[in-house]
Each structure stands twice: as C-alpha cells, then as structure tokens.
Length: 158
Image 1 (cartoon, rainbow, N blue to C red):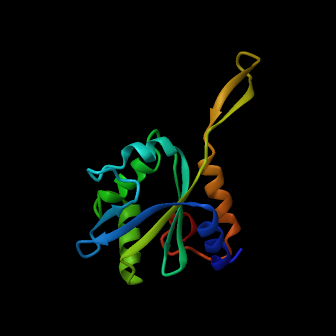
Image 2: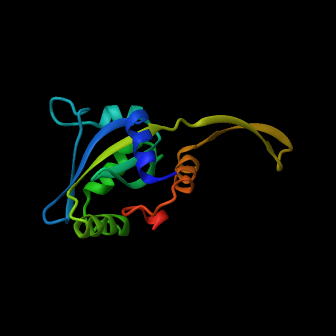
Image 3: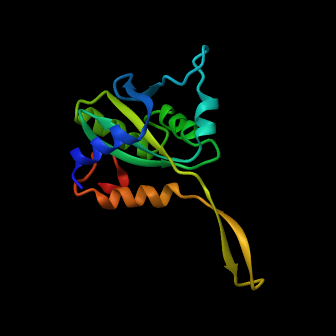
C-alpha cells in the first residue's frame, strides 16, 4: 500500500491524539492535545485509551508507525518523547530526521489495540490456561509490512 493511501485510511479511521512539536532547536518535544483537562493534564484519557498503535503524520505523509502497549499506553510513550534528545536513540533519530526534513510539527493519530484473553495449552502442567495477549506489537508489525515505502521517522522501517 502506498503512503498516500495509508494516510487517507489513518485520517478516516484512527483517533486524533494531538500534535507532537519539535522545540528548543530540535532538542525537545512538547505535546498539545484536545484531551487535556483545565490544568493541561491528559493522563486519565490516555491511560483509559490503553494499548495502541500510533501514527506520526507530517507534511501530508506518514512518517512513523509505533506502538504504545505499556501500563499507561500513549501517556507513557509521549512522556518518553518529551524527555528529549538525550533520552534515547529513538528520540535522537526522530528529532534529527525532523530537523533534516524541516518538519517541526507532526500530527498524532492512533488505533486502540485491546489486549485479548486467550486459552492456550501449558506444556508444563499439561492443561489449558487463560492468558492475556498484547496485540499492539503484532498490529504495528502488520502495518509496517503493508507499506511499500520507508518511513522517515521509523527505526523499524528505515
């Protein structure tokens, strides 16, 4: 699937989360969301949203597909981005590429990827057991395989 077709699907189907902005000469991020409360806090909404696959779109192009499947979902992931350039390799790469491409703002969209309860066979105890399966990583991988172009801000797809 080409990038333009994929972006149309994201814009039509996914939930809009807000904008991730490169600030301080591409050394940090801030996040602006319509889900913030009167004090600018957005923890509750994103924690309740849960696991998701998110999309960063800038200049009309899909730039990154990522997952947020921790206990606090997108809230945790956006706070990792907000720690800036020196936090980790992903932040450095994303900020450097945004600067190279002269992009200082990306829109964030996401699709909810709820955990699934499944029964599987346990070979040690030789019986079926119930497990909770995280789905975001598999869905992220599927989306990346669908794309026929490399994504500028995506480590897995570079």
